[in-house]
Image 1: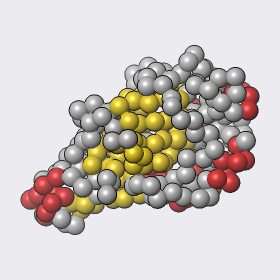
Image 2 (image 1 turned 60 degrees about the vertical axis):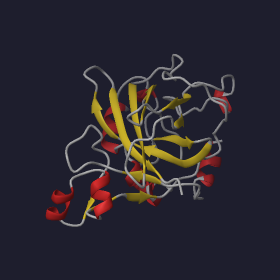
Image 3 (image 1 turned 90 degrees about the vertical axis):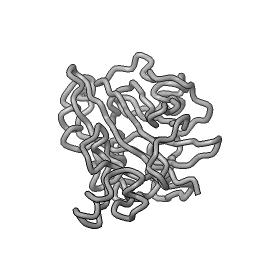
Image 4 (image 1 turned 180 degrees about the vertical axis):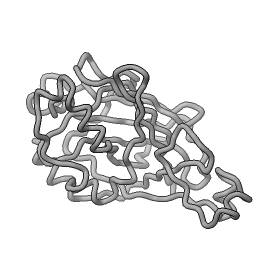
Length: 241
């Protein structure tokens, strides 16, 4: 089944646009980036919508990426999607903003799904007995943030380590994409149990068919959570037009 996703991932979709946005000031969502016309213009405009309106700061659009063959509609609305699956704890903080104003979108439904530590998806192949592990939906809060508790994904042949994602606004899919991880961090995580029982991952970011078509702009910003896990953050802007 994983070979099906590798083939499907060669196609791209244009249902919406994911925007990586960061602030000129330091922020908790350091994964994003502002495009600055000049230092003086940006300083005069400040950050956020005023800077966008002035033209001193612009949002950077990134390509969408295919959903692949493992999407299942109608997932549970829940924060913890682990269902007891073993793996390094991962908290995701996914922020959704309006691409035209850079303001947070409250109530957007963020839908994620990914493989377990040994590269298996629920609902398919050896994971067919369950259709729900490592799948779920969360709505964004007033700050545009959806939070998930999950585990660091495993790898499977032909794909770099990734998480699938859809963003729904007002009942419509505004974005279909994938989130990626720094290879150096993945190397460290995969020296731990249970990942180390399955060495020799085949595909890194640089030779993944999705990553080379825009995935660099969808890499999570990751930090340790003070324990044995990580917190991954990214800011995504949705174009409603």
